[in-house]
Amino acid sequence: MNKQYIKIISVLVSSWIFFSCDNNSTSSDTDNYDRLYVTLQGTHKVAVLNAHTLELIEEVAIDIAMMPTPHYVVLDEENGYWFVSAIMADKVAMYSMDTNELISTLSVDEDPAILSIDTSSKKLYSSRMMIMNMGGMAMGSTANLIDEISYSDEGMVLLQSYDSGVPTPHGLSLSDDKTMLLTASNTTDFLAKINIISGQIDNTSLDPSINDIPNLEINRLKPLEIVQRNGYAYITCTGGEWDNNGEYIDV
Image (tube, helix red, strand yellow):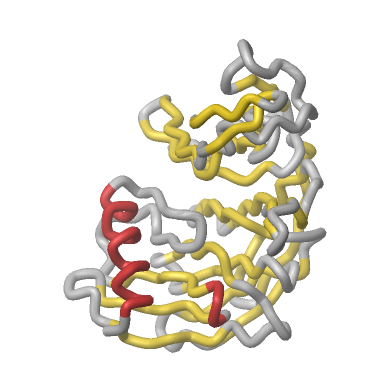
């Protein structure tokens, strides 16, 4: 096993235990599976690993565009599918868990990032990605949208898009009762709560003492991913060096 896999696996194992992930690999929200799916953004592939031995089973090339850049995977073990967001291709792809063959692709508005899934209703939810170029400048989506996608044996259909009210909503989580979506802006440190039954959307600052304006870009906490369990939300943040009007603070 080469160094690339060792590095990715070391991150994935700790993430898998807490049902979370780093920013370019993921596993299912189910704890009784026997495979791990790891996105290899640099090679545009998804690695399928044995969850018990961490041995490589297969590398699946995401051949849906010139440079698709796979970012995140979710599983539907009940129906035998896995899904991957391809940032640079602006697509979500659907694969067979049995054969790892491509079943369907769906074009979305731009830069799909984190996926959340409701296997009971066969629906996917997709957030947006902020990409940094070589010069450190932000690129990619500034859209507020969260896409709702249905899927079946015939493929995927975009049902609707929710306006979260915050730009670059990256982290995304569906509640245990499948009624509430939480997403957080990677640039403004604002949380959006989307009731998918009533359609009501509420915004809350992660730190109102620093920023209480949903569209004000501050790039301080940089929330990355959200997990909901038992009525609580757990949010991982990138943090790092923050430029506070010329004063650099380590967050």
